[in-house]
Length: 143
Image 1: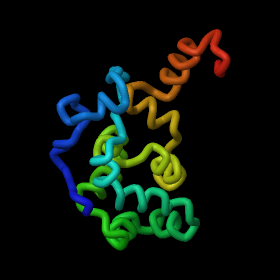
Image 2 (image 1 turned 120 degrees about the vertical axis):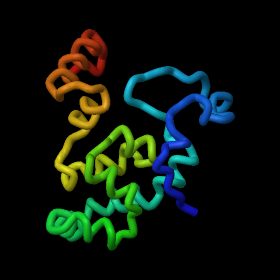
Image 3 (image 1 turned 30 degrees about the vertical axis):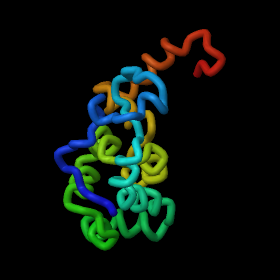
């Protein structure tokens, strides 16, 4: 059963983690991230289906032509539609959207993973890239 949680009661606060710390290990505070818990996965199931459907050219065209109709036909709740309208990526992830599903919908949503990461950290894309380059200097994965 998929339920809506507009109030974010299952949000990123440590109190909602339950027994996950014993399974996943100690919590590390990383700004702009939250765990993809079973509760989030269940809540975001319908939304993630919609986001991954954006891989299909016909679905992208339908979304571009009339986003409201496309979201309604897919059965998204008003809360899910609002999150997508606002492109509130932190709230989408907190609600239960998968970062992979958001990546599949990037073209349809008019964004990139760099822009989503920057927005989640309160930065411009240029600031985000500069910070990442500085942090990765000397690492094997330096870019």
